[in-house]
Length: 350
View (tube, rainbow, N blue to C red):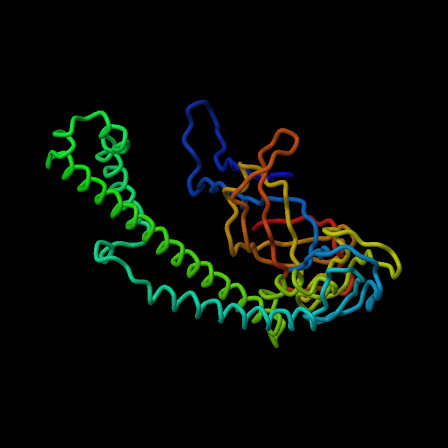
């Protein structure tokens, strides 16, 4: 990266000194200092305005390839198909999504009915299932502690005298604390049941939401880019274009095995081009802002100049040869048929 600071000072002596301490000649005046504008220069590379690298969501043998490098594709176009035991085409994925959506609706209705008809004890009326479980557990813990002296009631009674066995205090306390414990256990089990129903209802809600999302993505008539990921994941026997573009790299051959996660095709939208710089130092990046004008010259086309505007200035940094540097992106106002991805360029920020 080069930074040019051109500061030129011109001094004009308009006074001829006849002797030391002489006065300036009449009518002369000093010329003002001229300071040139700062120009920041960086190096960059040409990229399409938008591109993606597609990887496989299933491994298998490549059975069909429908494009070659350089072909134009539209959103949703099939690029290739795989043969894999558990992989689905778009049609089979759509059928499965429809079945799952129907089942999810039924599950939602069933869990909603159970939740609506749950007979909650009056103690729980102002509580959520989680709160009810917490409160009932606290009461159960206290009831078990209170009943502790009476849990071996039959052993203790045999050691008492006949008179002691018949004492009303002992019998009353034992029955009372046993009843408290039984009631606490009943409430605790009821709270567990309520929480289980509530949990199943929440799961049913999530299942229905996911099923609806999958269904909408698979049946999306516009084949929009924001639903392409779901289609790629579910219809994993096919590789489809997520947006309109050009196939710039293709790594698929019929009869070869392709592994899950393997990047097999690159699609680029070359309707516009950007230049990205990665060598602006911290001293220079503070002078660059979004919307700023830039002039771009390509090494391969030195006789031509292209104007552009800064669309983004990196917020994060990297290190290069000991310097802290930032990435900037410049959107070119025009394109040229000779432009190729990766061309090197010089960028002047004005």
